[in-house]
Image (cartoon, rainbow, N blue to C red):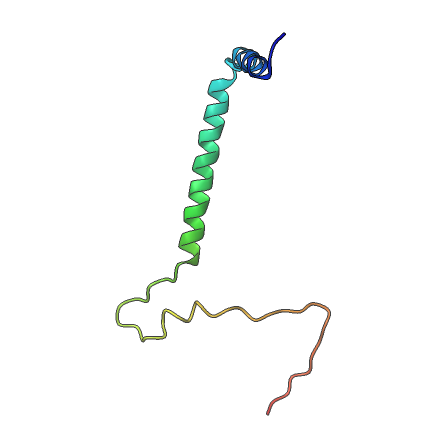
Length: 83
């Protein structure tokens, strides 16, 4: 009677033998997925990084783009009060 170790080894050999034709495609797909994730990570870092101000610009020039956009709450209207 086969033990768990021997049974696992036999199943592993069967899986490898049956999937050997698909192995290059699986590795290629994994490589593409890794490249896509890497490029998306790089794009997010570039998007989050503050942009440098052009030379000769004031000290607040780099912070103009860093301001958050105003919040929009749908379904509510408010009156504008000028003080």
